[in-house]
Image 1 (tube, rainbow, N blue to C red):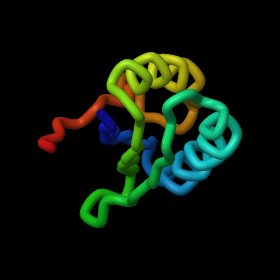
Image 2: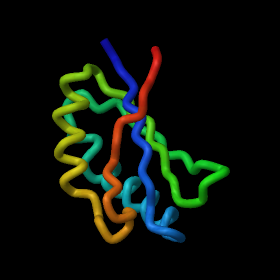
Image 3: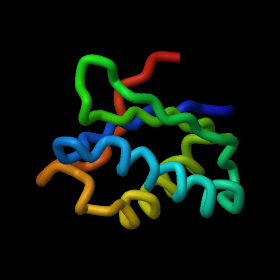
Image 4: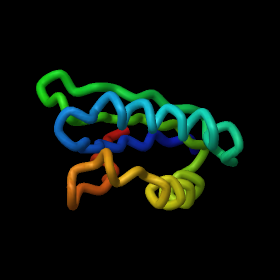
Length: 93
């Protein structure tokens, strides 16, 4: 069963564009080779200039959670606010 994973990332003040570009480069480099990865899209939050939301499509929850752990490990800490980690947002299908 295909799923969507929604992740909200808090960038350091003024670094949203850099964080979004980093995410796009990670997806371009690693996404196509990830088993079960179907694609993703990044969005900017209009009322908060430091948030990026990514919605990724995966073939299954098992594939998504396994690969999210690897992606989190590669995040660039210089672009995220201290203490902020990527967290899956609640999602209702």
